[in-house]
Image (tube, rainbow, N blue to C red):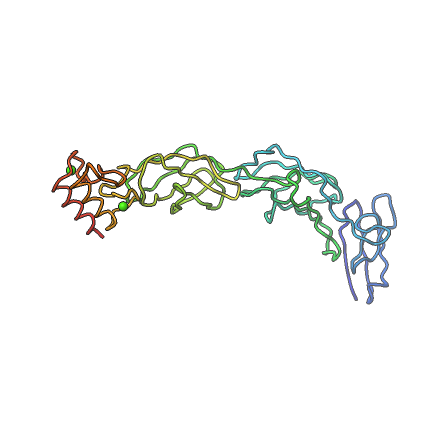
Length: 303
Ligand SMILES: [Ca+2]
Ligand SMILES: [Ca+2]
């Protein structure tokens, strides 16, 4: 004995039931002013003209157009952007609408139009999927979704934007915890870089990121936030001093490769061929002499 109930999308109730062999069962019921209604289709009882057509083929949700105020720049990553989805076969009672894999909060649901809010997230050209509420699950029911690759029938979150960087400078050894205040950073950590070098993220939310600078040198270095929605505007960061004294090769580190150019800057500065002879002035007194040699040697031996 098999008992099935189905919740029609239109007014009325179809209740069926009872047969050891579902193929022989009869659906009875009504659908508003139309009656009787019901058929067996793919091992489920359906309403005529509702989920089945005359050939007992399921009608699936079809999205024809998607509208939202966030176009074309994209919506905020905190979500809450109203999205209007127009089409057909959505059903009269509320089903499920997804943005990518995330549930959207439904504001209103009609058979030809749904208004729902974007969830928190990031990404570009995310697909919208509508699933109606016909139950129990109907094997031949398919998900209706917008045309893949059609940006007018999908939804995008906007790219991140940095408004403020604090502090704007730090030592060449790195490890400075900088705070990026901004917007649209997203609910999940993306990537933040300093001149292309990854920074270690300490915390991340929609409007603020804290991350540690890597060891490097130079001024006007660019910090950029990258999410699935794209990259942010760059913010300049200065290492102070702009370079490590003793870095005679201008590669932002002091190592044995700097010894030969250091000696050259010390003994023959007129013919120095390296990147910057003044970097041999370890104590920044304007002179290159024995004091600087001692400091340079000490720095080389520092682990
Ligand atoms: Ca060097
Ligand atoms: Ca000096």
